Length: 69
Image (cartoon, one colour):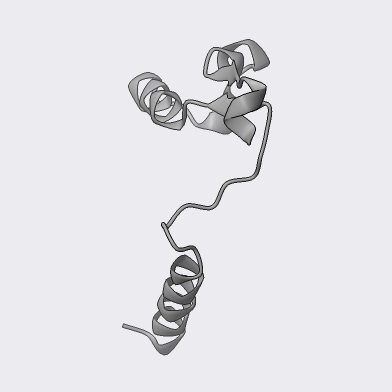
């Protein structure tokens, strides 16, 4: 493995270890169903960037205010 790849992997490990439970979340009023979005794109053989706004919105849901607390 190249030296630069090893350094990048070490940096990623340090970053991941920074978060106690391995999760980094930014409070938001929406949630994206990432797994479903990924499966949709794979099934259609397209990238996320090529989706229309209407297609993307089917994977976005509003979050109740108490879920952000």
